[in-house]
Image 1 (tube, one colour):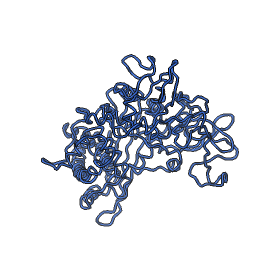
Image 2 (tube, rainbow, N blue to C red):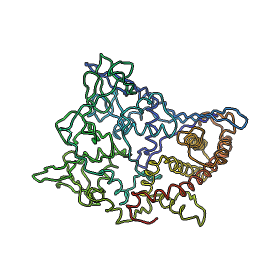
Image 3 (cartoon, rainbow, N blue to C red):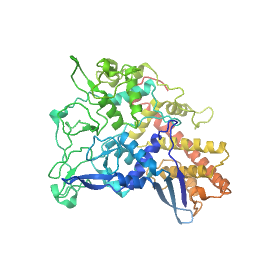
Length: 557
């Protein structure tokens, strides 16, 4: 079966692509590129896992996401189903999209990380944040391009991204006090991250490719240099001789990569966090205008942590979160220059802040289990639209608890982290993806399926969900009843071959046929959604409510 659909990027009212859309397009682009070593400059510096701006622009203009799955039907025939999603990206918009990737700190100029403006003839490498997004995309969709396999296996896949909950309608990150408190705990870390870059800088040896015969042929998947070039590792921007790359890091607890510098502060966009759990870089002691402050950090360091370690992709999102830290008295300005008009946090290297006593208490530095989240029950009325109920009237208490968790962004964030720690977050991801599909379907149903193009896009989305979560051997296969799984597979493989041409060439009379197929498939996926909901309610919720993270909230659900 072959299903093709063309789609545009979903954007907010002010024209910004939704996070999920941007991440999918980015990961699809990276999977289509040949990430190879490139040599730049008079001294022949070689940058591994890199790509040129020309390659990226060329692939963006004809970007396609293809998913393929083979299933054996009841007669023993092998049915191959292929879903091809083509992104309609105007060639003139490709450069703007690449600039968005740069601004979101997904890619950066390999030979000059200070460059923040996309131009032609530039060489790019991925950041640890970008690699984490590509890894999650590959696991979810089962699309593992040979071009990125070595990269995902390498030491550069170091980031455990903090995924923030977003409103499915507006794409806004929740800024309720409870959510801000949870983000702040990750931001501050379990203890102050006071690594001194100047005193503890050390070069990081990059293993070479086994065929090169260097360094004993370690067999590490990270490709190494030949004898005639100098290799530059991802993120460093600094070449070094003899097949090594300087990654100026602190001790084992270090979470950043930076260019060689005697400055102990995070003061440049070329500084980059490679790991999230240690929190923002702070000074144990910092003198600002003749006054000495403890646990002090710059606005630049705070912004870079959010941009590098979380799913924040726009600078204004980082400022909203950091300003909320100020408003909830979790951090305090070191001087009057550290607040802009409207009491906004200034995200610059010369604006300094320190962790307040309330912030220390919440982060658990002096004691554990006290602070903001115990004082106020997480509540976010109006932040999440009414979801499709998966419970029946008079449903049991466990299902009601799960409804409450999913409707509250703060609890949903913690619940997602709990599921990920127990390797079953695909259940929640499937549930939420199916909810988005249902919302899209109901919108089409309300308009009587008038547009064939939109019906095909929705049908394509349904197949994407099937390939990712329900097809045999799916990368994120959910655990459901065998009989229901069999019904789904039989329906999805009912037709041996259905070829849908491009939307603009389809006749009007095909709308009703496609709409009927879509209705049947969506109703079946909704049945699976309800079963997954009951599974999470009966198994995952009780375990979640016994975790220290939930018990620290001091609330009843």
